[in-house]
Length: 640
Image (cartoon, rainbow, N blue to C red; front, side, top):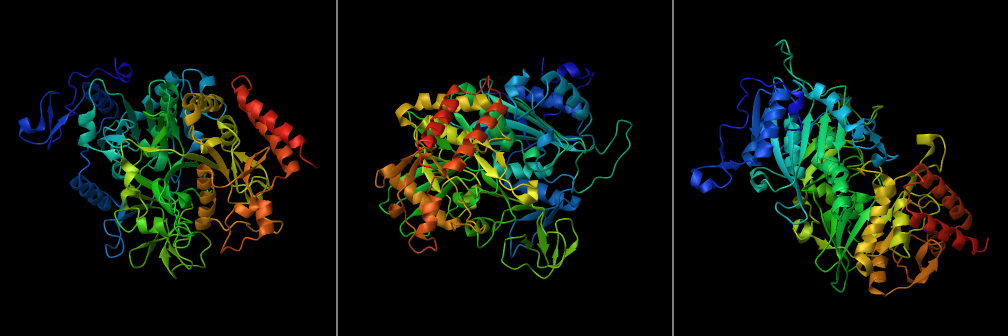
């Protein structure tokens, strides 16, 4: 019995839902060449699932997406006619479009995101949990008839290069053409993926509807809107059966189910069960002046300089940084026992505001064309703009809600979560290895947060276990504007707080287990912090491109070219060995940036114990409490 069949009627005439006009279904052993034209090989399980969902959601038409340019053009023209997209001036942004979402559908909805594991304890303290059968029953009632009057698109997609040993595949069903074209940029979609799936292939079913049927059960027709969505929203994950069901939202990670839903929440469970790692990490390739190549993976919470590091332009001569991925890394022990990683995504889904010609010229250059912008402002010349793109705003814009805007307006021109979606291969700094199916060998792992105090500019973890402790205690300090109290910590372990598909304490244990698996081949772990401030509240480190100096020190540590001063919090650079030439950083500032404030770290240890306790002492790994005790013992030996 299928996942939907028990809840569906058994109609006498099941609609022929899997025979698109331009493609024929063929048996598994029939080739496209023998058929005399384009052909789809459709696994029987996928065909049955699509048929089930079609009976449930009742779309007018079903389209099997092939991932072609013709399909892209057809869908973008359709959405222009519907008012969903505005074609941008091709002289400025060829083949690019602006979408304006409904103001009630502008971001991920964490409070409506659920992990539906069989047992609540397996979801843990950091996830919203619902019992799987109850959640499915509730969502089935929402999905029933939800696609009336609309087209259901079948989107086969691959996370990672198609057919790669580290890649995974899924099939998303959606009634949103915006989702289809976004998935085409963010993943590898279409016929090659579908033809890859056989009876022996594991694939993730991902069901999505905006929840806005155009025809009700009585046959009454509703006029469509430019951005359909439903006030009721659910983004539900079923880790035990590897399923994703999303209802009500058409935006971002709520609807592009290959991204956070599959690549992190479901994949993290797959990785735990199969002995690999699905992480919220960027990947970069670093080449030294001596032409030695290294690959780094780095985890940062939002607003902590992640994209800037992924597209770093070093200020120090002879160094080169190339982009492999900006957001997600899948890592698995390779044939030689060392950790190898791929970027499972095909594109970038970046936050536009704050990305500009001063902060990240590489990202701006990536968006030269073939880009979908969502909730940014429209210039009078048909191009786009957002806060931070240029130092000075245009004198007039149409804001993200379609209203006139000037620099005197009280509201921002672009929504703070406005996005750009573009393929990674357009990035000027993209590395040739970015889509290598075999991945790249990881030489070091970095963890960072936004800490105005306490945490040094850079430190090397003492061991893998200590590195896991560093990742588990990642946090950013909040501001008075956000909380009314400066210095309150928002914990975001491994930058995975919203994205771990199971119990966070068990996730920590999985990291420890991976260390046992990797043994001596485990890459060194470092902690970085670009955001230290002085007593006047000014940043002490210039950040941005100057972060290449931190990367330089890390690489030289890997090579054994520089020493580290051993402290209770890890190995710190020797001030005289750290490169601050041609910067405004003073030696006194550097002493502070690389120092250990005993009292601050004692308070940090107390906060860490409270946080660990909030995750459930019965599941927390003993090894992390051991690292906490070592930290306290080391701090006690420091002079007051």
